[in-house]
Image (cartoon, rainbow, N blue to C red; front, side, top):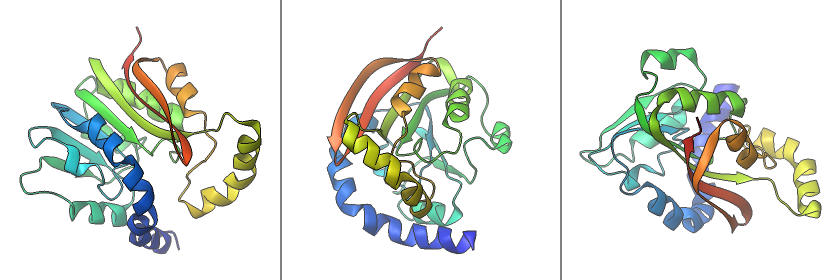
Amino acid sequence: MAKTYQKLFAAFYDPFMNSFERSLYKTRKEMLTGLNGEIIEVGAGTGVNFKFYDKQAHVMAIEPSLPMLKKAKNKLASGSNIKFLNYGVCDPELNQHIKENSIDYVVSMLVLCTIPDPEKALAQFKKWLKPDGKLIILEHIHSVHPRNKKIQNIVNPVWRAFADGCNLNRNTDQLILEAGFKPLSEEYIKRSLRFVKGVYKMEY
């Protein structure tokens, strides 16, 4: 049953997200173009970010859904330097592929809303990043308006079941700070949902 759902979700994901993704295109491009070195993209999904990475960058694309990963592979441009890892971000098997303090950038876009344990994921990011490494964030988060927040809380259980575990009402912006990351740049934007976008480094 779970495998069937994953196949259906992967098949409908891009068409369902098409208009929404158009509103995020410039933001994704602005945040990802020019990144170099060793990069981890968490929850690579169907590969919507791949076209923005420089070919010189070494990207490890982590994605737990095999059907999503198969769609992502179809979006690879010739000469792309992207390696695929079919794991969840907190799976211990990743330790065989990623050394601690070895990554220049961790990219998390529309992912922390879905990861079952975001605090654990953020701790993992800190282990992977070099001391001067950076966390690149684009995540939809809770509303600040009481009425909208109440609606999000009511709708969230149904939405989470439909949208592969996505939560509408997570305080992801606060979780990032509580995990020990400090914003180098941070901005709140509205794209039907409220988003936080930013670049963060570890606080020592």
